[in-house]
Length: 273
Image (cartoon, rainbow, N blue to C red; front, side, top):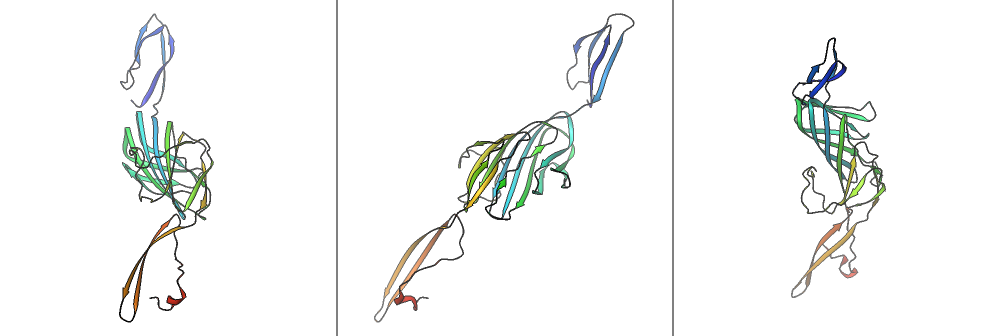
């Protein structure tokens, strides 16, 4: 039902049995004598929402992306919409799921994402939120995002961070987060969204938090390029000359580079092609 009804005043009335939730029956009462009085307290029923979430934060030098899967369990009364408090500085690009429409109120602090569902829904509600944030400097600190589902009685959250190989992360402030291991190649976490782009050589960090937690803060150091090269030489001997051909295969780790500087003998410098 859409109403909560509870006995408030019992004069010369005793309650024999209580009604079962969802049946619309308040209970069975016995009238002891006249005059009797039975008062009921009637209020609008409230939905009970429990939330679980898995968020993947991908850190690159110029931007950060967020992919957050929300798994809601709705009991008692169905809901028409979901409201999520978002940290400042994030721009929502898309919301997936049984969504009619969504909007962000950026004029309030924190900004609020409102997702209207296609119909009143109870039971399982699954949404995936995609957002991004630009970075002024590659080594700027990053406050990890905490998503707060409004009116949820409980929210258990996992957050995984994938950091580009050119950046070395450090946990500057753990806040109310708890750190956990992220095992590469292990079984996939059913709650964690799949990465949009696989980051080769990325550093992986894992965290947990509950409800409206104080966020952790990461600091970064820029790594210099680490270059290795495999050189193969082909010598072609002719009657009046010798031709050399070198094939160089470069392997660049950590930071990208836009040039390679080679030292060559002076005797062949003018003959290089």
